[in-house]
Image (cartoon, rainbow, N blue to C red):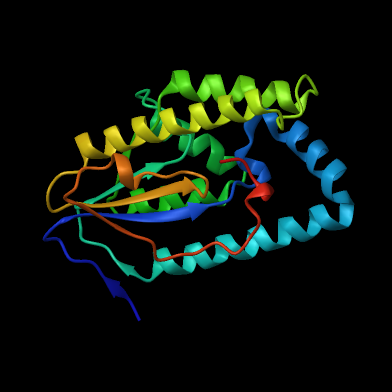
Amino acid sequence: MCESVGLHFRTLIYIPIIHTQADMGALQSQVKKASLKKFGLTGWKRKITLVDKYWTEIEKYIEGLSLPPGGVRIYQDALPVSGKERTIVEELAKSGSRNHILLLNLMDKGAILTGTESLELLLEEYNHVKRTLEGQSDGTGDAEKRISASILERRDRFIAMRINETLSPGELGIIFLGMLHSLEQWLDSDIQVAYPVHARIDPGSGRS
């Protein structure tokens, strides 16, 4: 049965995501190496299977939505405000990212893709994660945890600002965002947030 969405308020559907290998870009090989070291080959394969099943659940949910024509705006984790948003999505979709293939499908139905994140903050996080993966830091010290938390909060503030500024009255927003994020406290009070899909996988299976 299709789920219909009302258009009387600014509504944001929050889809908590888990990044797949195809989403990791330049960090893909390093993330895989770190995962194999942490979980072993069997554990890593099991997580890959669980993540695939979770994305199937997300795809079924999105397919079941009755989306209003011309009134849907989509936001994406790690998609910078750049003027090249569609190109980025297309390239990641070609690499096999189910997340970005889903974005293209929504865009084909008329959804508006919206730059979501600060490029500067994404680069700051990329360099921080890269240092951790390269063994310059294990990421567990108090200072490292504070850096990670600071970057995540600043990303959340920027994402919320983008939604506040771009989601118009009567529009439905759908955001695909990592489970470690927390947006509601930074969103305008008239934006109603729905959480229809719940991940049941350890967040350690993918970056935020």
